[in-house]
Image (cartoon, rainbow, N blue to C red; front, top):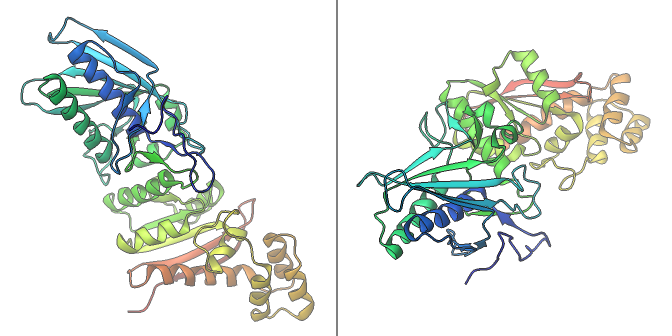
Length: 381
């Protein structure tokens, strides 16, 4: 039984937020409708698909078209679905995902093509070969299964060419990791479960992992996990790192460290705002303000270990912001920025465990001025 119609995810999650559907799920729905129309002349609307965990969402079609003579070479069918990402702040929410299906040569199986707005892989290190359309393995498998099901129901061979396109995908892709990962010309068709969990930021974390893969494949021996564009500029200025060695980790320090633990590079620089890195220093791996806070008491204790007297310790504990705390300490000659960098490095090394990675940390203020740093160090064998 389908759980939703109109491409809307319907039921709320335990957080009270509405989940949505991935681009891969939308592409699968569009492919199912297009191939059905290619064989029968009729588009199912809504069209229902089955996702990896058994969910069966139904999607309304936003567009459809048949071209060419029935079952003749060159005949094609196009179906379009509007992506609904639910309550997740997904840049592809509202994007129109189109699948154009054409009959293929006998025995060719399913062949994927990148249409307008879908990128092409140009760098090694991704789960797709260079030159392939940026349609990830799980969505490919979902579409293959959908094609087989439709072929069995309507007497098709299952030999088809599937072209996926996304309206305005090239423009949307500029605000994603794709250019840095070497995926050029548009977006990636993503998804492992077909479901977008609101604020899970799974796409961001997946991009971090793919960024590490690309850096390793390029032979990079030094990468930088940065909390934002300012820290990226600082890391680039300090070390001259190429773009594919810069990991836009945002708030997901834990994602960077855990993936590097399994896929190490010799050196990692962690660069970010002092307040965020003070959270890492205190042991937090998710640096988002909704999930961790700057602990002024912790900073006050660090300041005390750095030689701060009772009056300064009290001022740090009462500071409005982490930046105020580090500025007060700097004025008094207390190296709070360095102490935070060293503690953040210790947290990172604890997550990395025995991985052969040397870690250094750079703390900056909002203007990009370095307010604390520590030298590379690794766990002892």
